[in-house]
Amino acid sequence: MVTDADLAGKSYYVDFACFGYADRFCTLALGENGFAEFGNGLKAGEQPGPWRVETEEGIDYLQVIMPTKEIYRELYNIKGDDLFWRAELQKDAEGNITGVDGKIISEKKSLLGLKTDFVLEGTFKMTPLTDQKEREPMKGLLDKIEQLRLATGQDVKAQKAKGKKGAAKKGAAKKSASSKGMGV
Image (cartoon, rainbow, N blue to C red; front, side):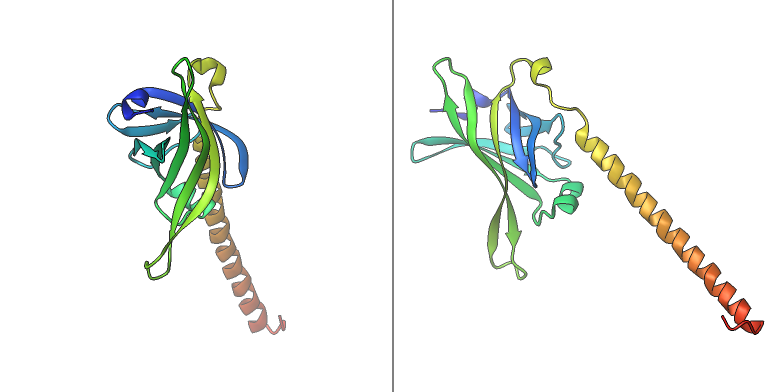
């Protein structure tokens, strides 16, 4: 049996596939305060989410709630504010605990909020983070994506503003040409 105390203060290397992407990596630190922090390529929202171990029918599961950032909700069309991570826990003879058959789920509420559907967003597995240099995923990947998104958004706004100015100039040129009898 695995308990919260067995995992508190431990960090894990997480291999996940989500939102149509495979072979993504991040770290997951399970704090002694009952909150989890994602890192190295995956970031939660403003606050870390809670984690716990739950046993169902003799099987231990790790459950982590990941508050999502607005960028995730926009890019991946996540309807709820959180992603729910849940994996079966396995303990080997040496006492190492791994997570297998993990599922990443979001909630989608109906239009009137009367019904909630669960959407499978991805899968994952996790292993203890023992040698960070050997297993360290790409740092700052999400930060770069966010920077690109913001830069692209600014470029789009600039293009729209430029397009409006260009349209105004063309309109003024047409008006000027027609007032001179040029029939434009």
